[in-house]
Image (cartoon, rainbow, N blue to C red):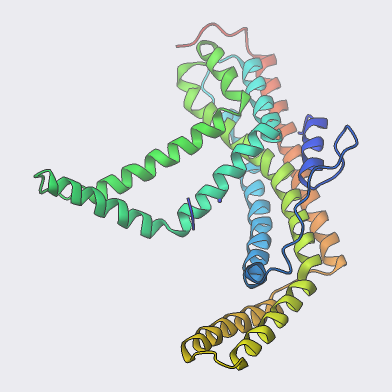
Length: 316
């Protein structure tokens, strides 16, 4: 792999843009034509279909996991703190997660992380080898390669986190009111803000977008199958052409084997009928509703703390 609330109108507008609906000015965003007639796309189609389904299943599980932790958030905060400001942190994190700026960064991060994960072993090996070689050339006999590869991974993860925080307004609130929130609470609140924004993004943007991607893939399925069939026949015709060398025939036969494998995977791949897609829509809506409920309960708990507490003095 290479180096992948709803305040509510903004998130709705983003979702419409992502799934290709009309923009507010009435124009239609440019749409890339289907690649179902491209052989390379058709060969990879079963993998893309599987990855899209996994993205939906993983997204639902992630929202459930993160929203399920909201009930413990207030108990993680040490007093004294400024509860109304903490309320702002939570609201800002949730709103940012559904916004376009955060979505762009999250999509970029997810794409890059997927590439890194796919090639993690190879990348680490090359980094370690290169550092070890440079160290030995410089007269150092210590094996620094493994440590360098680990440091690179940690630096990469930190940068990914920083990029998301740049698009999460909750961190600006924490930066401004850190003295009123309390230094002991800073790391906890930042982690909560990260998770709240991520849950909002997955529920409000990633899941509906993946659902639209799945619909597009299902719509392409028959065309993809026809492309694979035509490509197999084309290769067989090429092999029968006069003057085709044995080497070329062998390469063509290998391509046929790959195409037949893709066809078998396509036929075996789980697809959805309209009833299953409607059920999926219900599941996504349930994930969003559960997140709404968890957020409302968290904000209510914060407000209860604010009502019971005296005005917070600056906390160290």
